[in-house]
Amino acid sequence: MVNAYQTEGGLPLLDTYADTDVKSDYGINSSEPFTIHDGPVDPRLDYTVGRRGIDYNGFGLNPGKEWIRATFADVSGPYLPKKNMYQADEVDAQRGTGGWGSDWSRNQLQCATICGCAINGR
Image 1 (cartoon, rainbow, N blue to C red):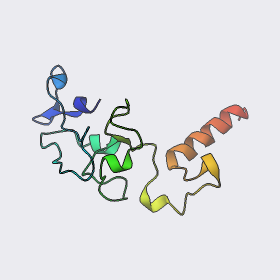
Image 2: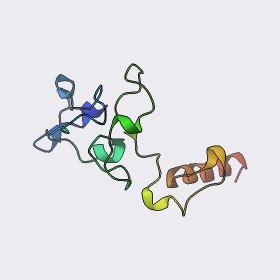
Image 3: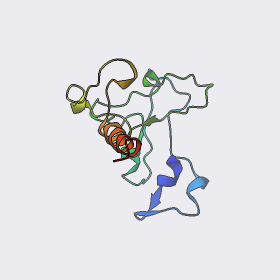
Image 4: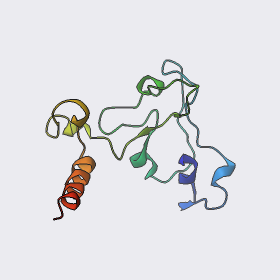
């Protein structure tokens, strides 16, 4: 998916995006040096996935493997989700209570509201 965000002259690479990979830190521990991809990408990429060396929703630079629970042998890959994760400035204001409901993001609250209306028949 990340490769599809590559551009040339500001336009997406519709037919050739899979020919080259966006550089990732897959297989590289957080303690090892890494230089982020320097090729042109759509700026929306970093609003979609968390990449090493890029700010992660206001929590600072993503350190890479240190924030990924899975092992390198797992199928999860080197990226973190961003759209369904709360922002750093929402930590106290939007905090839910206990267990699975803690730290709801705006997206989750909006979805819960929409689903609640649909379930309740409103």
